[in-house]
Amino acid sequence: MSDKPKRQVPTGPRNSRRDVKTAKGQPVAQSGRPSDRLADRRSDSVSARMRQSKPAHDPIARPSTNQPHPNTAKTKDSRKKNVKSKPPIAMPEEQKNRRLPNKSGSSPNHGTSSHHNKSLSDSQKKGYVSYEHIGHLEKVRKKRTLSAALFLIIVTLLLMVVTASAIIYINDFVAAKPRFAFVSTGSVEHSVGTTALVVREESVFYSQNSGTLVALVTEGSRVAKLQQLAMVIPEGMDITISNLNNIQQQIVEIERELVAKGHAEKAKLIYNEMDSAMLPVINLLRNDSMNGRLADIHSYTSTIQVIMDKRDQSLQNVDFNDEQLIALRNTKTQYERELSSGSTILSAVMPGVVSYKIDGLETVLTYQLLQNMLPSECSKYISESSGIITTDPEISSGDAVLRISQNETQYFACTVSDASVYEYPLDSIHKIRVPAESILIEDCKVVRSTQYEDNVFVVFKTSNSIERLLDRRSIDIEIIKTSTEGLRVPVSALVDPDYSKGFADILINSSGYARSLTVILLDYDREYAIIAPVEGFDQPNHSTIVITNPHTIADGEKVEQ
Image (cartoon, rainbow, N blue to C red; front, side):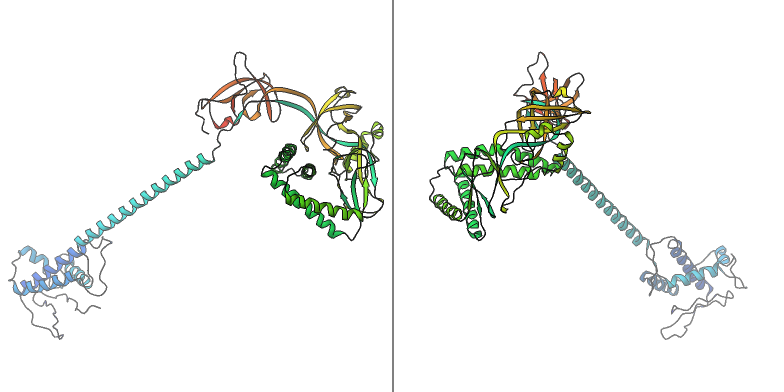
């Protein structure tokens, strides 16, 4: 409760008093003049109405919790001073009658005096903020709100600019760029694929002793009669075999280093020749690996190993004029003599192509068998074969250890689906491609053609690529039916091709700008198309640069590389 006493409602015009508390709590003398009391009451009522008129609707005004506002205290002190010092104010009779209470204790205008007294008591208990201070706070709040809104707008705009720049940069970075290729001369082939059984006329050699087989010549090499082919090393010479393998590895590494440094032109020619034979196989291996086709991985690695063995065998006859290499070769010869002294030597009894990979069908599958073989039997041999023939260096007495193909002829037996014997007449020549080995055999002659149901059982004969296919019992082949040669471009370079009418458009790089060119479409397959210039035009030709992804650029646009 407040320390100040509450105002007492007067009961009569002459008995009204205002209790004033002294410092010690004792009442002091009061003026009994009605004019003083009326002026005091009027001043208090007017001040209360002024303080309560605005704060009742202003949410910013906050009452003081402990003490009245200093301005209020000053106003009260000044009011007391004015009351005591100033003479009584003459008021009109109309105001006197309106403000003076009646004898019954109520004011003439329905109790406004008691209402003002109550408001004055409440206002004395609470402190309020002035209008000037309220306006200042309102301006500060509006200013801060406006500043925060402007800051958020600026930050949002900056983020939008940065995001748009990043999107433009990323789109430009990852967007497909035009790719180019020269128009080249090539061919487009249409072929049919199948799996063929490989048959050769071979002679098999057996070992009379048990031990470890060590080859003395490279797999697939042509050998002469009485040439040493392999050694069967008995048990107990494992250390000597390991030392010999280490020496051979060191010799190969030194030979490669000397070739890389430019020593021995003959060795460089051997490397270039073997690299040319190895490159197509490596490309096939890379392409199948990227596309997830792993069925022929072992075949690729076996072919690469054979080529590398031939290269190393050929390098042994090259004189590098290097003292370290000479010393290693002499050490290798000593180890070979040491092994041969306690081993069984196998020599060739006939010339031919040698192989150390045995599958047990060398003496079963012959040309005579192919002449009477049923298509179902051929399919059975193909399904049971592992494709690539492997070898085991550990042998027992009586095992077959090597074979020699002498007649330089091999046969491909296969079944062609949805075909007719008229497509494969006897003695006709066909081209067969072996994708796994990246080779094309052009002299495949038909020696048997049998029709059954809608299929044809065909046997081809060839004398090419025997060394490359010596470790194969079955292979996947493509029999080429037709071939068209001419100016070749990728199929992806064609724009809106009309295959029925034989026309298409291509985009070429003409002086740094993309230009559309109509061409004649002669032939095509899944990868390439054979084209020719329209009559009266000299383009395309071998110097024409074609855009292989025309969807990345439009006709007339500048070419950015």
